[in-house]
Length: 93
Image 1 (tube, rainbow, N blue to C red):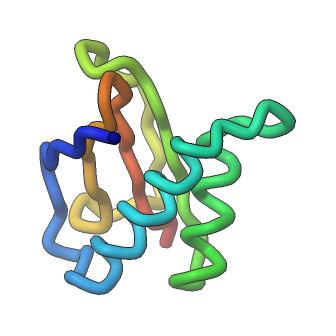
Image 2 (cartoon, helix red, strand yellow):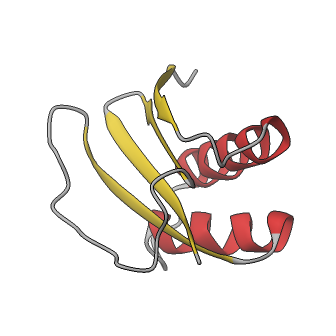
């Protein structure tokens, strides 16, 4: 069983996107395919389901990923955790 915890959701993510993002990341996390990284698979799944371009960062829950993307608007993101992993998902404009 995977424990989900919502941390933050930007105003640019609607309920449909929210649901599909969580499902894609959760499914990928549960599969943990060793051939590709979880973030890569999750981003491609999100793209297939929602279109557009997406970036997925994964780190430990108590860590803050250090990243900056100039083409991302501050409202098109969500942050949540699955067990001990924090997912930062953002749409690229």
